[in-house]
Amino acid sequence: MRHAKGILLAAAGIAIVSFMGTFAVKLAEKETIKNHTSVTSEKMDHKTQIETTDELNLYAQSAVLMDASTNRILYGKNEELVRPMASTTKIMTCIIALENGNLSDPVAATQNAANQPKVHLGVYKGETIYLKDLLYSLMLESHNDAAMMIAEHVGGSREGFAKLMNQKARELGCSNTYFITPNGLDAKEENDGEIKEHSTTAADLARIMNYCIGNSPKSKEFLEITGTQSYYFTDVDGKRSFSCTNHNALLSSMSGAFSGKTGFTGGAGYSYVGSVKSDGRIFTIALLGCGWPPHKTWKWSDARKLFQYGMDRFHYRDVYEEVPMPEVLINEGIPISGGLDKPVFIASSMAEDREKSLKLLLADDEKVTVKTSIPDKIEAPVKKGQKIGSVTYWLNNQPVKEYPVYLTEGTKRLTVIWCLKNMVTRYLSMPGFFQILTSS
Image (cartoon, rainbow, N blue to C red):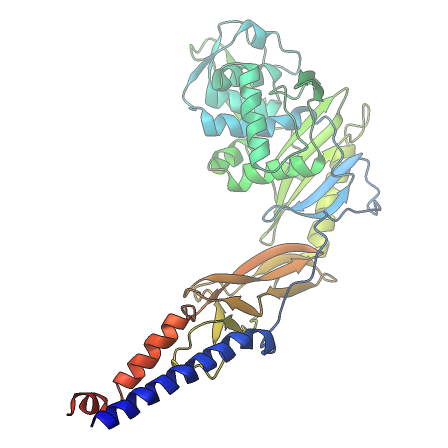
């Protein structure tokens, strides 16, 4: 029996050498195994697509038509050119006041507010008006003194309110926008040794509008104010009464128009920002430098051209498609079977609860491409549910939707210690193994 034990121990030693050799082969496989699946994304140019010709022959020096739901530019003319924006500023003034103020607050006019130039409500120092009423005065009649009263009440000062406006602009990604006044009057100031002008771009202004009408927690209140045709109010004491009429002519002359703001200063010219609904689509436009007196109506001509262009050309299409998910080689991973003769592959998958629909506003000649970015192999250890890549939908060299890709299983890393433990476990589980060791 001792001879039998010796034979058994010798066999165990030979097995260890055999397993070590297999382990060495396993480690070498990472250099020799061919890629099982290799799907990677191509390099893309992320620069914004710019319209090089003004096929609509617009009057505006800068203009943009935007899909309000995605901020995608559908038509542009110098849309990234920085320009003053006059009273279209007041859409930001309104949304900042709605998000940071209390509509029932009484607001007292300072001398600074009372001194604001026309167009103005005509308040006098000390006169008190509710914040809600001032917002209607601001957005319907574009009163400059109302804007200053709002700013000083909500921001503590004109400067404090401008900080809130600029902070919001940065949050919205409007890097080419700088606010100085709450009413949009032409202004310049020194900031960090640089002369800054009260200005924006057509693209930034449209993005701000899209936030006001859709993504702001106060968009409902914003829409209620800007969609009102006329409004009547008094001061807090009831001594004076005021009436306001909305100067957004499209509200009554264009089907689907539901919000907007006009503007004019000598430096900015006529400007306009507004939105229209049509068959489930929402279009936003912004016009800057759209003529000077006596061409007050040019902005309405441009607005109709842009909106009509959008409604005629762009429609929703569902572009979602099922994408086959590859198995991924897990380099030096432990196989589920415990054997070392085959490489380890784990299936990849997108989230099961993903929305299997992707509706995009597209022109008839626009095409969406789908690209996967998944590595052909990953080093162990890996975890179940680990994100390893993505499936991305591209339109005009811009990513419009990304779905993450995950591993469906996990595995530990193959080591010498694991091989030894695995070998010992296998031999200990052999039928009659303990009987041989314990027999005498």
